[in-house]
Image (cartoon, rainbow, N blue to C red; front, side, top):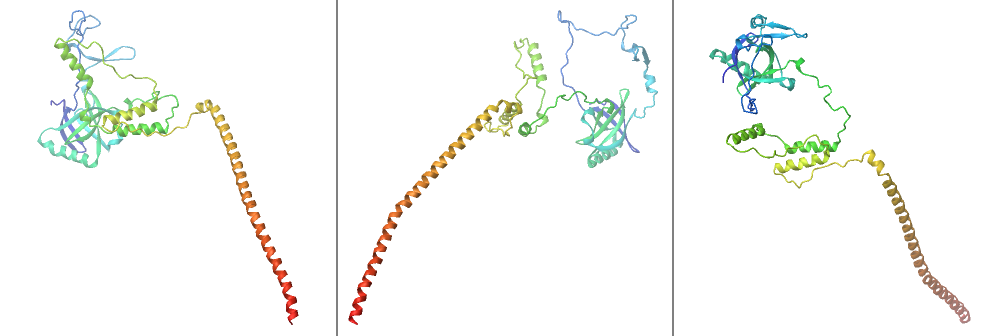
Length: 355
């Protein structure tokens, strides 16, 4: 890699000579503009508005356009004369927790390399201090004619620096959130959680740019004389009003199939209470249910009464059946008693006679 900036890290009274390298590269495919009629390249020419003369790079300077349209010429010497402490220094101003940095601020990434053998020791010291503190360093530096904000952190055994946007460069999200009052039901959140759990984690290293690969294949095909596809492949539609619950359930099933889990396993859904509008529409059904309840209650009461009457009749029948037997027994007892009394009367005179 070729360094794009040379300077030093200012860490208190410690100065660490470093070189700056781009940490990222773009793989996007660029196209040239052509004349569709004959295929000729379309080029841009830098022409002066006043005399129409075409200019080369050595004849072109810079200027600031004022609000009224007037131009204020600014030379490189003017900018170089400005007091810019960070012109050749990455000045660390603070150490903060990494989660205190809003990801919206993060911009271009760079690698910092120790410049020369003497810089290895202080470079390693700063790297190990960042590791042990589990913090990131906030710094100010100048690059390409302007002062910037940066965040230093450790990546493997290298100190990396992310350019940060200044706080006033972050727009407030006014008017972006939905204006209507939208309520999310617990069942929908449960399904969303289930979908998140099913999708799980991903190894970012396995992700790739499908569109770029398709463009490269198209270029190779056309360069070889092949015809492009007659019809574009189907793409997923967007912006349609959908049944959210059904879409979530389908997504959970699809994610489980992709992970090799059983697709037949149904998603857990919490039963929802009907909305007010649905309750109004089903009012007749409620009346019918009440009538049916009353009818059932009446039928049950009649059935209970009949059952009680039958039970009473049976009990009375048993009682009446048992009564004749009791009467007969009583009659027999009464006859026996009378006979004994009669026998006693006859026996008494005999005893007196023998006396």
